[in-house]
Length: 113
Length: 107
Image (cartoon, rainbow over all chains, first blue to last red; front, top):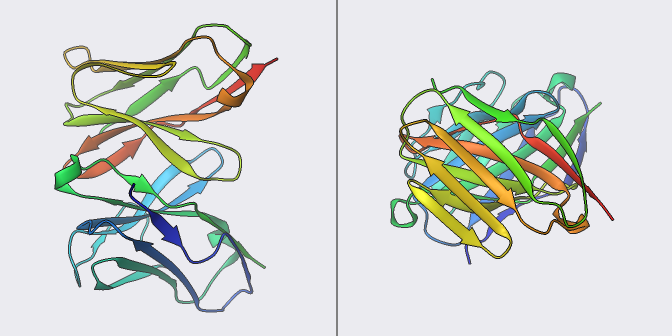
């Protein structure tokens, strides 16, 4: 089974702090994605990556950056956390060999105070 | 960009009932995901299909590519089926999500 893990299930940070959310997948997937999920807005794509050191902006990249130094790891960075970044963050991965079916991590619920 | 609409938004059923959740989209796709999310956040992929029908236990998913429509059916529903069900369409390796259907199955 594909396993996608995220570094924390719950995280509380203060406004202005730098926040790192880590995602690791163990199935050698080329594609990795970061989403945020908010009530009434559903899942929205923040950033994605189709290869190591490659990144592309999704629909809502403002206030975020990403890093993909290794194939299995995709990090989401909040340079200076703000209260409107309080949300559920979900990572996913996929591969052409699995028909691009996306497999999701358990999510990180981030609260910014 | 694809527009994905799900209906109903909320659904309450009695245990044992047959349930249908619908999904329609606006632009041709390569495949469609049905996802399940239980309270607590984790999302599980139930099906990915590009044509016809797939069945897994009490769950059945169908897709009509010409009509740009998919349905998720749950037979003999059970309280443990209570969750949010999300339809997502795959286009160029990316997903566009519907808003989800909150299903509550009462004992």
